[in-house]
Image 1: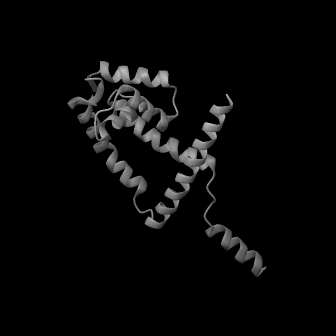
Image 2: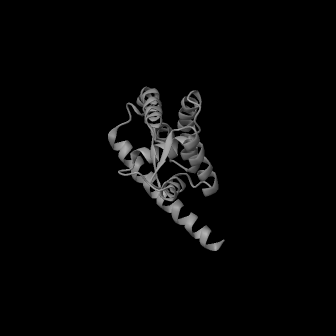
Image 3: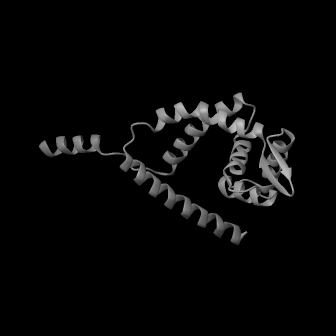
Length: 159
């Protein structure tokens, strides 16, 4: 009886082992929060990723370089990303100058507004998680990303 009780107690306090489904559920839950904020600004997730990528670069990028960066992040179809870049240009959130793309004042203001709206939500989501847990999660996610990228490359090579 004692063994059963302590096994039951140990099971109740043992953290669940993360798996691909858990990762996907966490991703889509967090993305769902962001997409609600983006919708209020009339921006899609892919537009946000592309605009943010253009914003955080040290220097303006060529359309092809920005497309590559977004494609590496989202694993999206390059044609869809080109469409997204054209949308951002048409909405005056990006501007083309000398063969390079850079965010406009409106694009910078949009990213700042989205950041301001999501900051308190992010604080509630991430707040209180011990630093050591975040460090372990970061290492695990880096490994998963590296391995998944390698599998994508292998699949592309087989195609």
